[in-house]
Image (cartoon, rainbow, N blue to C red; front, side, top):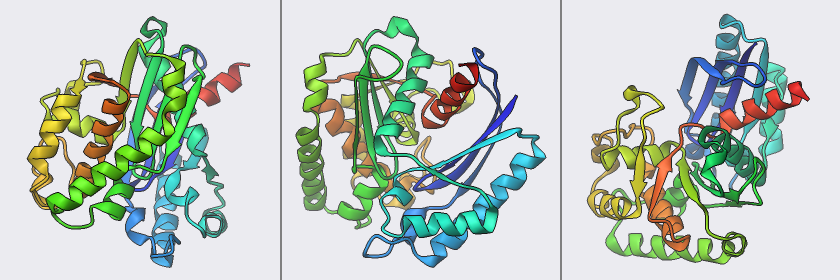
Length: 309
């Protein structure tokens, strides 16, 4: 069957269309992505401005039209921290529902971590043993660890690349003092939350997901996306530390000229790198492997599992 997933994130509205069946590898058919940058429409009190809501309605309508043109039989939709954390998130969703007749499902941070872990587990297989997944989104950081398809530990921290940038790295470029303060705050927050992971024991394999991780790996010399998803791509903590030193003095426009960095995400690359470095350091991870499957694929796999049950 042909499935579609609309993912409303902090940066983009992304429609992924796949041909999928229970027990089979979901085959991507098409992808339609729109730069929403919802975080730029957040007011001082955390509410999403009317301009952001209107753009979201327009983009969801566009995705629905593309899904219809692509012959999608079942369309799954979800939103993450950008709307989940907004005080007026329910009102935003109500307006989308009224204008498009489509209900957007709000995933909790733990849901994000568990679904992303499911996708990573299916990609890496059972031979990976105890698996640790590090996923850096625009609004939150998800950490999950376990030996099965459902992780033993699933954490969500408000340390997404976009959030850290907006709250702690607003200058372009930020000063050394600002960067130092941001690194200290990020490390303190992660350190205060990771005890469950430490108690669960050391992983046999560590993977990273998300555009932030892929961009950092690409800057460090990993193969470009054009070479396909099956090429092994790795990212070391030393690479991230070197990248931070390299990009810290650059403006967002200058970062956008680096390989694998899009103009729409260049401004938050430093924030994402700071989070990645801190998470890997505090979890004792020297190198991780980039996993091409993440939350969208996890949503698809969970849906297919329910069909097969």
